[in-house]
Each structure stands twice: as C-alpha cells, then as structure tokens.
Length: 236
Image (cartoon, rainbow, N blue to C red; front, side):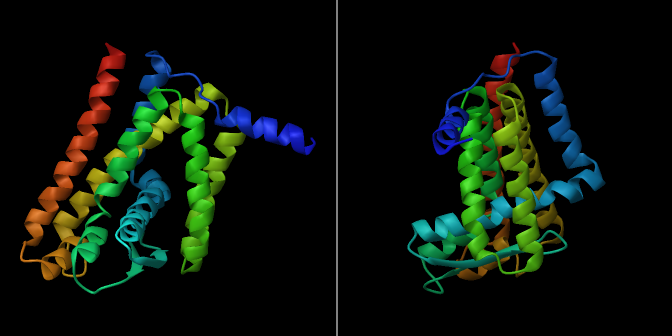
C-alpha cells in the first residue's frame, strides 16, 4: 500500500458512517455496557478507561484556565491523579480540580450523540490522537500500560472495525462512561476523604464537599438525561 492509498484509507475512516438502527444489536450494545459496569472482573479490567478520562478532564480544564499540565498517573488500584502547575488557589485551580468527576459523563454523553449521528469513526480517531499525545505526560509504568491498552483497542476498532460495528461499540463506550461516572461518584460518596476532589475543593473554597458532590451529580444526571432521551427517541 503506497502513501496515496494509505491517505485514502485514513480519509475513508474519517468520513461519516452509518447510524445504529433500533434493532437487537443496539439493545445488545447497551446491555454489554451495563454488564461491564456491574460485573466486578469486567469492571476492574475496563475501569482504567474511566480513570483516564477523569484525569484528562482535570488536564483539559486546567489548560483552558491557563495552567500547565505536567503529567498524570493511573494507579494499580485504578485511582489516579493529574498535576497542573499554576496558582495554588483561585478559579483556575478550582475548576481544574472540579472537572474530573464530570468528565467521563460529558465525554460519554457526547459519544452517544456522535455514534447516533454517524460520526463514530471520526470520534475514535480524535480519541486515539488524544491518547497518543497523552503518553508524553504519563508518570508511571502502569499508566503507560493503561493508556497503550486503551489506544490499541481504539486504534484496532477504528482501522479494522466495520462502520456498523464501530458505531455500536462507540455507543456502548459512551454508555459505559456514563455509568462509570455514576459508579465513580458513588465510590467517592462512600469513601471520600480530604485528598479526594470534593475534599480538596472544600479546602479551596468555603463550599462543603457535600455540595461539590451534588454539583458532580447534577452534571452526570444532565449527561445521562441527554443520552437517554436520544436513545428513547430512537427506540420508539
């Protein structure tokens, strides 16, 4: 395959594709996403994807607020942390700290919309680019492995997956991130401490951690409503 053929192949994989129909395959994709979140071995295997999006959410908002992103870690217990450099207090620090828990829900809701409007392959390519670039900022061997595994899975689906399969699995990934956002929030509600995001936000502001958790829940609920309303319209 010469350069021209490679460019044509890449271009073809960036073009809009089919929209999942309302048949059994759509319901299967939704069921698989739910199963992964509730079955412990599957959750432990794929939870790093939620953690990576969480940490890159910190990074993206930090960069938008003028902070410098220096690296992130996904630990063996699937917790993580991202480091942005800037003022120790202020709106930039607050928003970058806040962004982690809502990030998987926002990305998940967007993936659902993208998959249902034919842009799944374009989104997968964008996600692949983000993951490859983020390798520069990984700060542990486990983080490198988690990001590489995610990039390999996304890259294989983007290059070899059929347009229909790509759309369905992108939809499933969006639902998985939404459900994973709820599960992550539940975890911090049960076991959160001063070093978790809501605890840090309570130290940075006069607002208690409980209200920050409520703000996370509101964003995740809005994302879930947006995705759910679109899916219900399709299934009617």
